[in-house]
Amino acid sequence: MPVLDHIGIAVDSIDEQLGFYEALGLAAEGFEEVDEQGVRVAFLPVGDSRLELLEATGPSSPIARHLERRGAGLHHICLRVDDIRKAMDSLRVKGYQLLSEEPQQGAHGCLVCFVHPKSSGGVLLELSQKME
Ligand code: ZN
Image 1 (cartoon, rainbow, N blue to C red):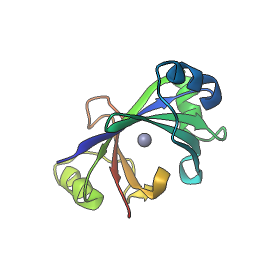
Image 2 (cartoon, rainbow, N blue to C red; image 1 turned 180 degrees about the horizontal axis):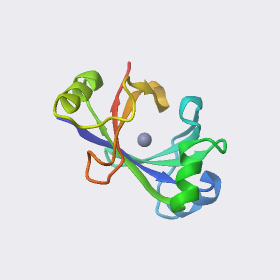
Image 3 (cartoon, rainbow, N blue to C red; image 1 turned 30 degrees about the vertical axis):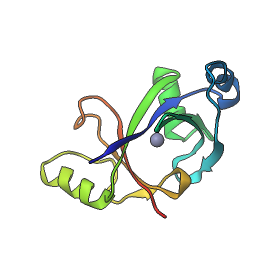
């Protein structure tokens, strides 16, 4: 069964937004740049899940476009699955739309795929599989 891996939040600046979460007692466990997605991310553990702060690394980044259109705020939720290709096939055969044909490289070496918000009721949904 999928579990809630993280909630993605688009921010103008990770460094500027971190203070807010630190005031709540949360701490970033690491920073990472994901070139494939044009983002810099910071993960903040919250119980068994995490918040993922997303900052654009360039003007063509999907996060830059999101910030332009909607400003900072909730960006996506991520469900972790055991087998991302199986999950993608299971959605595709039922006619749900994915944003990529193949899984892509995500943060922490995970394989990720996004589901089209039209298929997931207006929520940008990320599927993720841990690669060990
Ligand atoms: Zn994410």
